[in-house]
Length: 122
Ligand code: FES
Image 1 (spheres, rainbow, N blue to C red):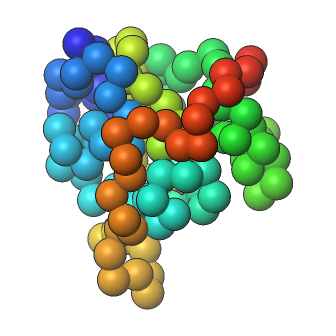
Image 2 (tube, rainbow, N blue to C red):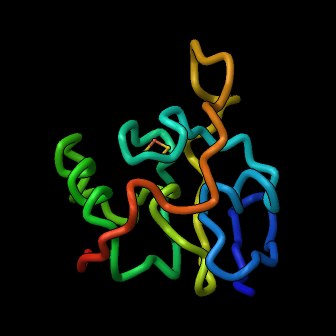
């Protein structure tokens, strides 16, 4: 189990290695955006880490953050590309309720990181 703290919402116990995007949705009940369905293509699943930012990331996350000019934004990470394997504190900044012109948060991401994770240094 890992503890996930979402600023303004509380602290939640998360099953080991659950995808962060699903932990936000299921345990924390955040209306977290995930427009591409958790496939590292949209960046709408982004969150802002306050503590516990992982030191590794998937190659897919690294590539799309660079392509969108977001790689240098401190603490900004993609929740669909992170597993809950340690305690984390973050801000949920990309939510359906604060995103204009969206009718839903996106198709529910699968249980496994997609595309298959290739872990690299952040
Ligand atoms: S990049 Fe689209 S849901 Fe994560």
